[in-house]
Length: 201
Ligand SMILES: [Zn+2]
Ligand SMILES: [Zn+2]
Image (cartoon, rainbow, N blue to C red):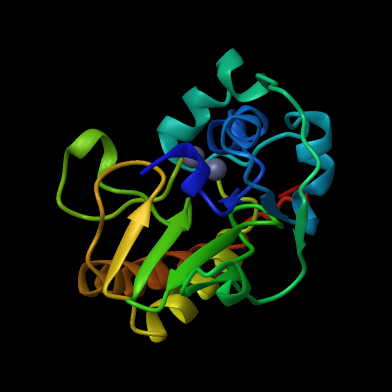
């Protein structure tokens, strides 16, 4: 495969570790960049300055590191995603699906073969330890992210390719998602679930 064979660069969401090289990759390949409009201000700024909502001990430690404040080269998406977007015009048998929750502008790619490129909807077991899928260190809206993850699973993907760690099989993720739903429902009952749009608690 040559750099010129790349038809489109899909940025899954506005966290720097997921769009760090987008502008440079676009220059090297000549390919346009697609990104969801809800994270547009982050792409234009080259990073995020808003507070993150950490999940668990790792998230609370991570949020104190300078890494989360890093910025990178800004870019302007050539293709602004506002809804489900089929890519057949580009000769790619896939569609981009908005999957908000991790960030408002998170998006995934589902190929016609059932491969789901899922960004940070879910992560592989932390550092390869443990057997179960896991949350990444942050979600802006944990319930929203879980709801859209379960919607994606209902479409019957054959494999989930995640931003952090090895690919996951959907049965494994479905079991984890059911358990996570029960955990979040318990937290919500106790008023201990925050989303980025409603700070406090
Ligand atoms: Zn992320
Ligand atoms: Zn990430």
